[in-house]
Image (cartoon, rainbow, N blue to C red; front, side, top):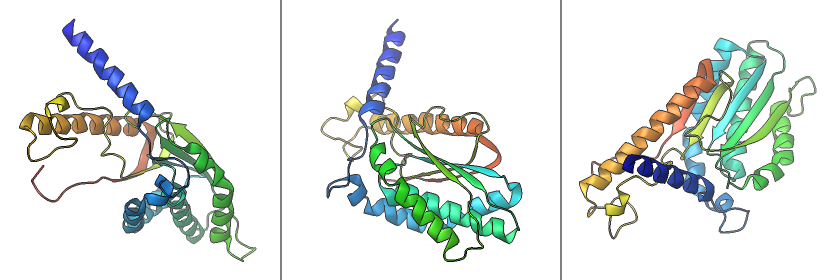
Length: 243
């Protein structure tokens, strides 16, 4: 019975985190859209890795409809739609080199329910116009298929998409966010994160929570990705053994 109560508390904590955790909404000076400089830099650093991965996928599979997911998309246009533009541009170069006709794209932007999806959706018209201009330029001979964008609210620590429906999954600077406060974190008295004064039990609790979350993430994506699909994940880490 005590174990059942503990599981119920864990479920309540997970639901609470999923409902309240989000980046600062809007486009004001203090919003995430205006203050996510480091995240933009990381996306720039990993650009070649993402492009190479999606080119490899396309060249081997050559699907007519390509489904791309950005998990933990937030609300900064350059962070989510900018990534999507780069991925589509890379495919467009590859498919022209192979002599393939126009492709259709299905883009799924995922984040927790509290994310500012309205800001994302308001920028879609500008995104589509910019995308077509970048792909086609001034060449009337070039063709570009349709791009359909949808929002997918929910935790990526659970299933988000139908089985074998995704071709490419991307996530940057999101997977270090845990699904819930680790059991035992209350022992970390006087700190709001792992610090030198934190007992080893707290370090272990955070490690085990990440291990459980990441295992669940990979298990869910393994069902959603088609055979031969690709995934590029960027996770914040540390160089030192000091927790």
